[in-house]
Image 1: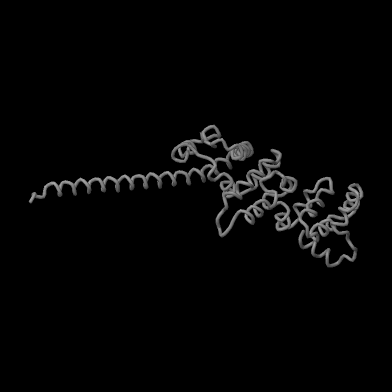
Image 2: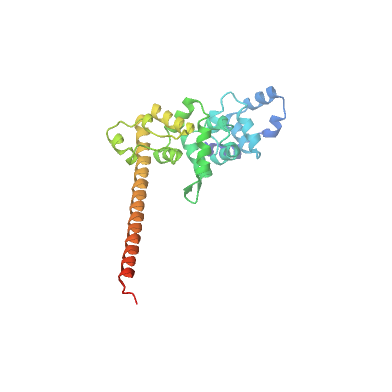
Length: 249
């Protein structure tokens, strides 16, 4: 679609209205004028509009802006939704994006120097939970496992040992997972469970392995600390014995 839009721009001699011009009209007139344009023309008007707030309003001049949103550049969509992520006000655009677009939007906003910013990831989760169930399901089931795990990382606790036994025998369910009162994380996990149980279990395996590794590391550190403390006490006792065994002058 991007190639087609570029070709259209190069060949079209028709002067298109600007986004500001359209929105300066009465609502009914703006809607009618925008809908008289072809989709390529509508995209051209949208992408030539520099103000993200005006650009967003243009999507709402058609009954269903899904095709327009999915034909838009991810950079343009990020400019529109970034100020609203986490507030519930980005749902108008977010409800229309493809899973691939969401993944790119998440990467552009939440990943810095190869690491995911937990606060930004949390805001994306908050925004996702504002979607209608079918919209949320459509996005989640189209994401890869690593990104799904990222949305829940640090927000769920599986049974001891990373839930390995329950996962191995296929008995892990939402009731066995501690969400610590995190309703948004529960909503994401619940929707994934209802939409694709196998994908849900695969995500839990990723998180379970990480939890198990963290628990083993913590146990090892605790064991090492106990050994150091025991060695210190033994050294103190030995020092006391040596001191007490010295002949008095």
